[in-house]
Image (cartoon, rainbow, N blue to C red):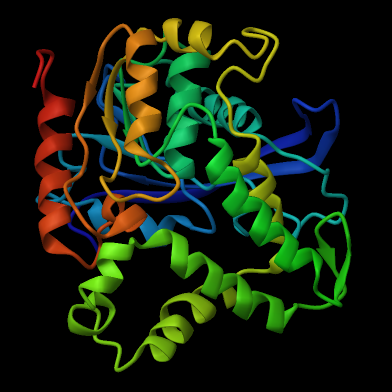
Length: 342
């Protein structure tokens, strides 16, 4: 139970034409909302989900004393395609080869307009793949978005980031259960264990492991236990086909990958009129500070606030680390509530 209003629902999109030219049959978006929509519909914060996450996984930062205050904001969390709640390979037999971030934000625009009559957003807040979607919102709908928080994300998936993703894809493709095109005859248990262990080496920094935080802070008795409980078991909760589909979405992340910008990233960044808060993790191994630094010269109104943490990519979703959570809360709250430079 929460001390504020919440609601959940499923928004039916019908047979959804995709950016690729394919169709997602019987498409639907699962969603959850926190707080109360103001009469002027001017207090909306959209909070897209991240890789393999479902909305309950990300609600920890919502609360009167949290990063997003439901007493002030109407917070809508749309579950990303492929996460098992919205349309995904696990619940859609005729899953297309690619569903992009562009497809997600176009569907989210319809969800907001047709469910609540929302046309403008006070902010879009996203972490990781959620940040990629937030960046897409700012670029594709500049007249609809006042602010965007890009938490451990980038406008285009970097090549080094894609190396990580290609490795994860290859592990799943090598499974005996793989039937091709990211579909499986049964859950590939051995490959999913390897998948989790690869992820553990990228999501947390070298400094995190050097400081032995997997034991001293997270309480694992040894490294193998940590890899099993925090990584193998985490990804075993999700169907391999869903994990693969979202890897494809992540791999093709690019706000300029559409007819409006024709691959011109500088032009896409320059089209953004929203105020941006760029919050890369100082030790993130795949969404790097350098990626956001390179974007800054092309942005009209952006603030760069790296998260000072050795928790790698997890610094942007610090549900188990109070110091990082406090930095995130204070920085984001100031940004959402101010029209001046921080």
